[in-house]
Image 1 (tube, rainbow, N blue to C red):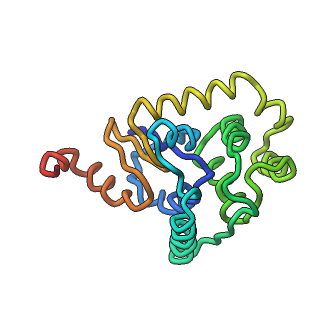
Image 2: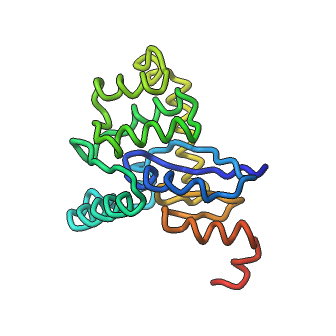
Length: 195
């Protein structure tokens, strides 16, 4: 089995979108989801987020809704965006950050249109994830440290957007890069012929 790191922040709709194609990954691939803080990447690289540029915000959400419809997936905007995703990321870590838990969290926000940061919404998500005493868990220092370490690792690896697959140091950013990553997995010499 090969393990591939997948860096994501569910403040973006695109992890939810990308999860809809995980069945196309080779059967010998195990995905290790790595929750991070997208805003920290933006700050590190000196970029604005898509939601900070109104025209890009509109286009981003239209694109996400269109792709979801093309794939037969429900799509619903959370009531407020952007939202503070820190507690959501910590809750995902507390739940184990597996592909299944990430899918449940992403669907809660982007498939069902629930809030990304309100206690009521997070409480309902914690119940779906089977996380008891979720408020204490997201405040736990070890969970905070894990999220910070994940984010620091993403920055150190040169990751600049979410979601991003890291295949042995080769980065594949966004749902639309999945076909290129699949070609690379088939032929690791692929980039020897590309700039």
